[in-house]
Image (cartoon, rainbow, N blue to C red; front, side, top):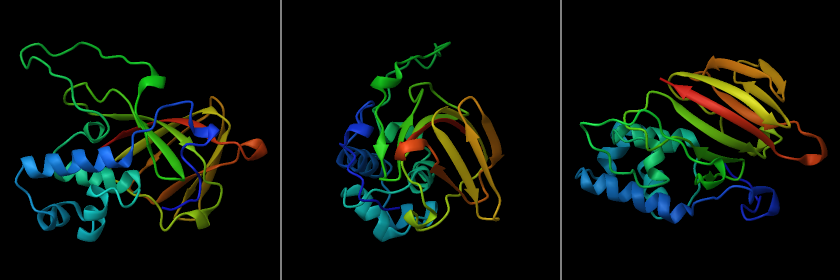
Length: 206
């Protein structure tokens, strides 16, 4: 994905964004800790070796799809690429974790800002994520987004159209929801008035 949107612009400053250099460094550290080469990670994840190298060197912003694929191949929660995991006593699992949305680090691809939630809950079975949607045209994307599992979306602000590679689409507004097979290629587009971004809470599950 690519966009000329400046991630430091006023529309994106309501929530903190992590520098992609830190994401790349954490990805590299986890890979090195598992004694994997870039080639091995590429083979496991299905992400091109050249793309993984650019991700680690912070030379490119990539979609959630590629970050998630790399994290799955490393058997790592994607949220650990955004913030280091807290130490937990393996014999005492937390009942609940909570953190203010404004303090949750996010990652910008230009078309979206992703903010993974509850990353410090060990062994998560769902991936909740707050997303700011800036893209308004399909032409802003190189391809549709696909990942294993199912996806639930609740619009918090603005309006969103979810466009599927099948040609189907759904337009949802505030307090409206969508639930779909995320293995089918899909893209979120903002339909908010006055060229504003849309804000969506997304929950993904394999």
